[in-house]
Image (cartoon, rainbow, N blue to C red; front, top):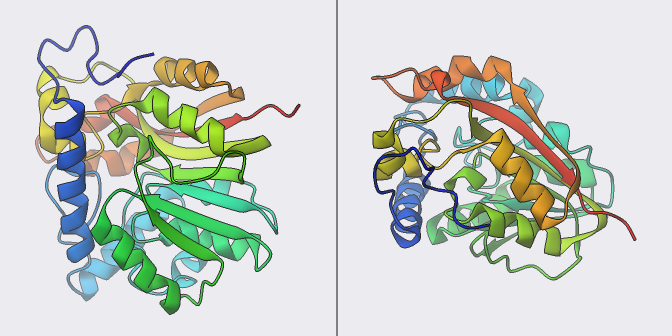
Length: 280
């Protein structure tokens, strides 16, 4: 299956893969340097003041994180990124090896580390050097000796074959210009019986062509989103079984905040995406 970034009815030329990666990397480098929110056409001022911190906590609650989740991770890792709480749907167990695709400053990694314990391991992969640097600084702040961060693209994971029990990700796969390759890589690194538990945005109605072609929209978790049926096909083609995509209907409340000019909840919804690599 080829790049899914340009649907047949788009009516305009979408950015190529190199342009998309550059736009995403530039956006998240800026976010790493100065904490801000994700998935908006312009960076949010959240995190710049005490009231911004409160907004970020409220935002996390909308995503599905509890107050205890937010308070259990040292400040600096929770940038208000994401569109759900993948650790809440991953059913992590003590001793699991967990991989986070697009780990950012490490918030979900540190939550996962608490679940898997000292006998487990968490690996975060991100393609933005500035995010990796920030995440590594947060390891000491969270005393997370079972967490490490690796620089790399989610289409080409710096992870060994069959070495991971659970893959999580939060509003990141939509940013990829080659989602089928992301799922093939996820399948490769999972152990037999391993599973995928992802929160991401999906398209519920055709996006306006201008959004599909706009670089800020693509880098802001909007323009690159795929439909549920497209994602189901990508997962099954990669080899996953027990595939499920469950829309998070209450996500409309925060998706409406992503654009001041249009209601993006008319086109997008957050979804819980799951699949399993078959055991022999």
